Amino acid sequence: SSTTLPLIVGIVTPSVCLLALVISLYILWRKRVIFVFRVINMFKAYEDD
Image (cartoon, rainbow, N blue to C red; front, side, top):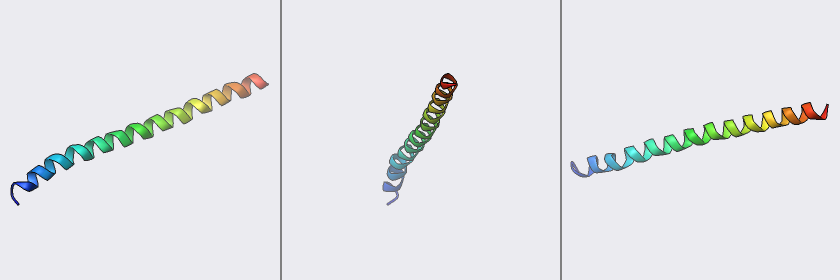
């Protein structure tokens, strides 16, 4: 069991780090998309006046 534990940690740790990175990037991207849509809607509302 002393040899399998480092192997599991070596596989799980990068996977968890990668997953956290992907999730954080997805959240940032989604927030940016919402912001862009908001700006576009503001411009549309401004043009309608």
